[in-house]
Length: 100
Image 1 (cartoon, rainbow, N blue to C red):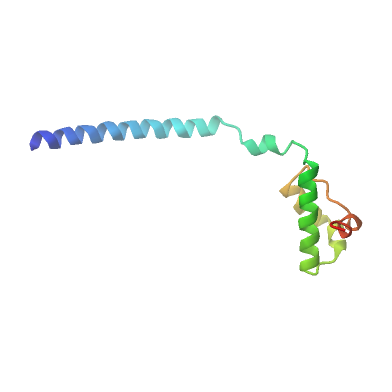
Image 2 (image 1 turned 120 degrees about the vertical axis):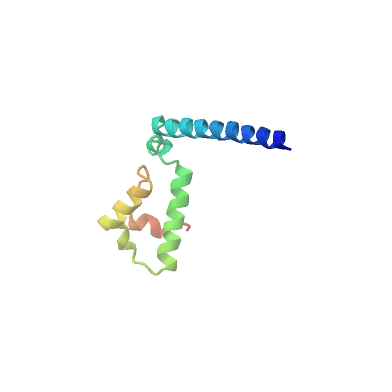
């Protein structure tokens, strides 16, 4: 019985050292990798995606009874650009005709 306990403890120490080395490797890999968001934001927004965003915005403005003039407010424009930098925000006139 003592032999099996010693063997178990040796296995545990091996597992622990392997885990520690893999943790070290993972943390160093994370620091050297670039974030995919930095590259993704540079791609233009596809027309299909712009259409989906326009429809969702129009639905939000209508259902929440928000004035369409809010689309031209600088804070709203800043908010949209933070969400998706390549999206071209439509004018209030374009959004009122979305879905017709």
